[in-house]
Length: 318
Image (cartoon, rainbow, N blue to C red; front, side, top):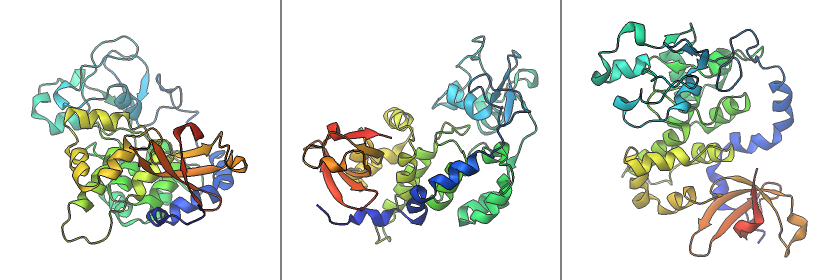
């Protein structure tokens, strides 16, 4: 006990600043544009972001909410989920139709109707790839009201929004900023990908690089887990064979996969019920490793950097 964790080096300055900037971020979030003048999404009950109307004319929906409503793997089955209001089949998005010849016979009258909204242009995606946070802040409206349409905007192919781009390109510093300003940690692209699956692909691409001598940078993956990203869809995609990178990581980095499949892996947790060190109860920690054979976790205290081995009974998700 008391030693500093080597795993802490995987988290960059953006992750370290998260806890220090909590107060500032809470103040900033009070000034976010909440979409009071926009029609409410019938799924999240907030102002519709990148709003879409369905052919049955039932309300408006955020494009991301609609994608969350109908997770899918095979684009040819994308329309099988029904309208949240009446149950009629939902048409595929324009991006799905453009990228899958099986969907080319959809009539214009039966397609989704899009509100005018921000689209991520190539220069914005390039700025995300290069980690130019100032450019991205200007794009989403900082320091005035944050434009949620831009914060959740998707590129013309329906493959990336800003959070996905940060995860795909390994930009954990940008990812932290976007999440602090209210971006959704579990947003879906038109192809069913989540930021977590994008971050996993980024880690996989590093692992399979035979010329790379350094350990894979897992900072975006851990950032998403610390912010509460849902691993359910990740496991669903892996089980269906639609995320081959996941199975490949079992060979490249089995400990990482073991961590992802555990209850508290990579999460930010509160220490509870620790009788041997009662003064640590209530402290926050980050989970870095899961020892499956012992069913214990390697936890690092946020306040001191001390390392402990804890039972699942001594942890509570935050």
